[in-house]
Length: 344
Image 1 (cartoon, rainbow, N blue to C red):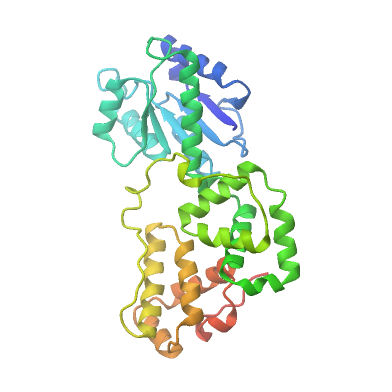
Image 2 (image 1 turned 45 degrees about the vertical axis):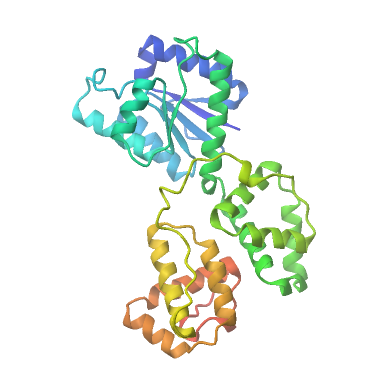
C-alpha cells in the first residue's frame, strides 16, 4: 500500500492538527509519501489522504486524484465546524465540494462526525479519534485504524485501481467464461494464460473484487477453471467495503421476459443504455445481452426499426461496439445495421 499524505497549510499552522499529522506520518512508516504543492502526483499511489485545507489547491488535488483514478480521503480536522470556521462563504463551499468529491471523509471527534452527518448525504464517513488528545485510543491503534480504512476505501473503489491492461484481462476472462469454444483459440488462450500467471496477489484481489462488484464473478471462476489456473485463496464476501447500495439503489439488474423475442431484445438494449447513463455496473448486463443475442430468435429489421423510432439507434450501435470488445460478441450475432468494424 502506497499512501500520499498532503498536509495543508492550515493544518501546518495549527499545533494540534500538525501533531496529529506527524503522528500519522510516523505510524504509516514506509507506506507514506508526503506531498507538497510543488510535487507532480505519483500515478502509482494507491490513495491520497488530505489533512485539513480549505483552499483551491486542496480542492484541485482531489480533482487531480480522481482524474488519475486514485481514491482520496479527506480529513477536515475540525475546520468545517461552524464555531471554528471563520472563513468566507466561498471557503465553506470549497470544503463541501472537497467532501463530496472525495471517496470518504474522516472525522476526528464525535462532534465533527455528528455535524457532518447532518450536512452531508451519501458519503462514507468514518470516526477515528485523535490519539494526540485522547486516551481512548493509542497512537499505534489509531494508525492501524487508518491503514484498515485506507484498504477499505481502495477495495470499495477498486474500479479506480483497474488500469486498461488489467481491465482487458478481465474482459478476456469474461469471454472465456461465456464461451467454452474459445479454448480452441490457442494463440488467444496462450496470451491470456501467460499474462495472468504473472499477477500478484494484490492484482488478483483487485480483479476478483471488481468482478464481484460488476456481477461477473461466476464467469471469472468458470474461466479460471477452464484454464486450470489457481489463484491466491480469498473470500471476496469477507472483504470489508463501504455499502454501495445507497449509491446504486436504482441499479438492480432486471431480467426482461415479457413480450416476443424482438421485444425482449429491444427492452434489454434500451435498459442497458439507460443503466449506462445512470452509471450502473454494466458487465453483467453485457454478459446477459451476449447470451440473449446468441439464443433469441428475433426479427433484426423490426429491432432496428424500433431503435430508430425511439432515437436509440446510434447508442445501440455504440453498445454493440462495446460488447465486441468486452464480451467478444462476434459479427454473426450482431444485427447487420448495428455492426461496426472494430478498431485494431
